[in-house]
Image 1 (cartoon, helix red, strand yellow):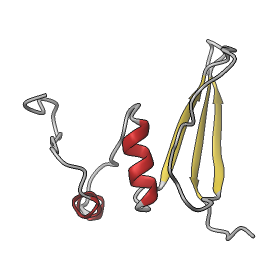
Image 2 (cartoon, one colour):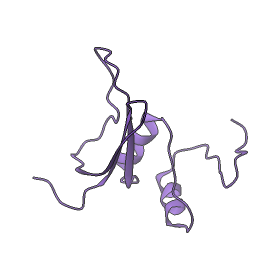
Image 3 (cartoon, rainbow, N blue to C red):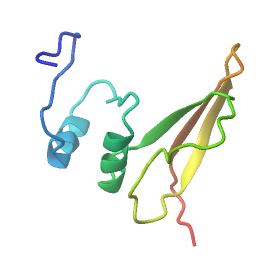
Length: 102
């Protein structure tokens, strides 16, 4: 991708956690990551993600991949919302837990 053509969009060439922290501190809408496990994994390691939304599609494949990799410490999450779609899919919304886990 050469340019971000969507309104209110910005293209970053590198994953600099400080740049993301600066963007999060600005007023405006939320930041969203669509479908990139590697970016989510990296930003999770840096504590940059406040909310996770997972789409659960009920198809049994027999094996799969970890959604978020290389997270060295346990990260408790609180379920904020579960929404069933007409397709049978479920959207699960989790936020970083305010409690501490054992």
